[in-house]
Length: 176
Image (cartoon, rainbow, N blue to C red; front, side):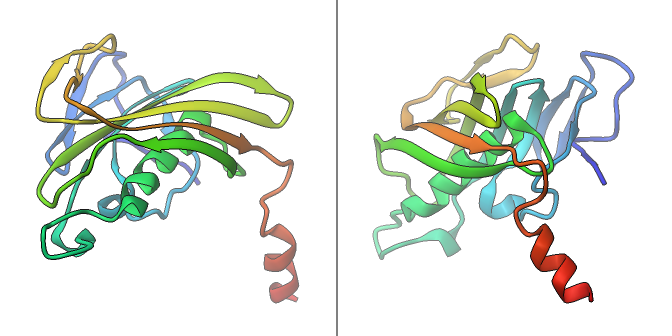
């Protein structure tokens, strides 16, 4: 089952809104991580072959301490989700990452992750992800807007696309 980013557009440049975020559709559908909680892992804003853009809001429940610092695991979840959507295959899983947390994130901030498929080596997909503060917006190549604020995270993700879902054997065993 595929989830669409927005009500499906018949136009290559139609904009819509999902949870307050402008969504630009290229008529591509979400084919992976369909049950993920977008409040934790980011709301898809734009999706095209080999590319994804997500917007994310730092909620009070993500607070690590009294100063309002957001735990980095939430930022990593946003970046990981963006990488999975750039690959956009039902069986995609994360194998490795090399990442840098470049600036702290505080409760109340809005971030945007942009993921681009850099190359494919067989079942290995290499994806580059940048996460920026969404306090500054600029026109993007897809006709929408994208974050132009401070970069807070950068990572390279190695994703694998096995022929079967990684839990296929376990699901089949419990069904018997």
